[in-house]
Length: 403
Image (tube, rainbow, N blue to C red):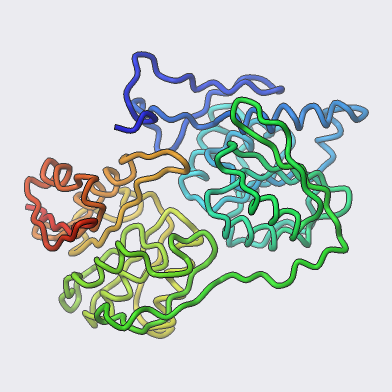
């Protein structure tokens, strides 16, 4: 069991101490058994540094209040909630992160202005005076977003990145330097580090290289040779990952009229392959990443045309507010087993339980996963059955039927 998810005698504190007071923060969906906090040492470090920067100017509170603040990649809303009094704009790729931010703002008694919670697909602000960046796991997403935000940056903009030391690499610093301006790092504090960047408007970073397109291999069934579109941050954005490749070789053929969900769709290649194999199937693509859902829609439209029927939904798995219970015939799923830097099976379990709720009696959930994750145990416990469809030394394809 991963040490980050091992139950402890005492739960970790949920209180984040900030220069503007302590905050009680949670992840989303809120779970009293959750062992992972909604903030970390990098959030604390960034907020302390920002308060110090403001205090060094005349009138600290006024200094921040008069600036247009943007927070990029705030994971669970810790930074946005701490700075709520200064009305920051949040830019996030995560539906779960946005929902956590809404809940944490409400819990803190702060104004909840959803118009200030932007996605990575929205038009960015025209001017940014303070840019705070939680370094994402995906270097590609950071590259794309810095390109998109660069026109709003001016010589006086304060740019501060933050992450744990394991998240900040030479390539991370090179992106800030190439796109925004000269960059240095702080000393490490509690295994966290800051990135301090001085904007240089004379820089020409060149064009944004995203989205990226590639052709699928010729031996993977109905989707062979088809084009995949990947926006930055989408899983395996530059090539077909080996787990999905194995899944594509063993996909079921949907019946005409069947409602099929590509759950955790990523770039949508699995759902697109199902649509190509089963003309007449009704496809629904679901992911919590806005970048992923945009990728899935472009992949699907590129291969099946602009008028082919399909739905594209940014949501928390198959929560009841996203898909009606008993309305789905087939769910195809390649669940993630990481949440940022933590290894956890919480997302997979939520996907499996949501799939069971959404399926009609006789409906099927097909899952691909690493063999060592033991998903067959969870599926048998939940569905009362699970059959191995295919396997190799690394992956298994499993099928569970709702009785």
